[in-house]
Amino acid sequence: MGADGEKAICYSCQAAAAVARPPPTPSSRECIILRMEGKETFKNAVQAMQTAAEEALRRCEIDITRIKCIIPHQANRRIIEAVGERLNARPEQLFINVDKYGNTSAASVAIALDEAVGSGLVQRGDLILLVVFGAGLTWGAAVIEW
Image 1: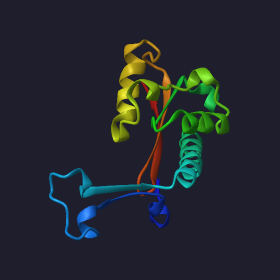
Image 2: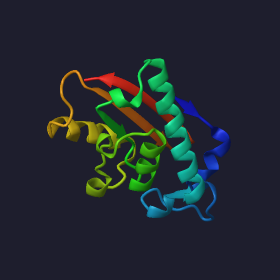
Image 3: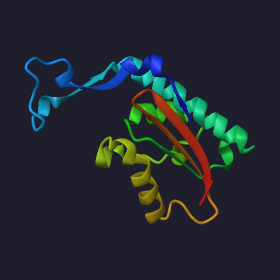
């Protein structure tokens, strides 16, 4: 796991009440301002997810060929595919369902894991690589044996 608060401005959320005059009511949609620098976020997400995944694999003393299924944070297809390419993963190793549900934020890996198991893609004894990225900027990865 890791974090880089110096890059938090790339992808952050701010309560509008801190900047708006007069402040919005708590029930208004204007209460939260989401800010994202797309190109910087993409670049940082791909790099951080690659680094986290490689570190998890190194600590487990395995390489990507032993991984049955890579379940990344489902931010967007471009990020997932870029991470897969950088890891030298086979396309069939990458589990992608962002086209079905969109970016479900912190729930995306849990949803994808449930779907991969439910579909029979992941079987008992398989090695799975989970890799995530989020606001702040934060990231992490884990290798698990199902």
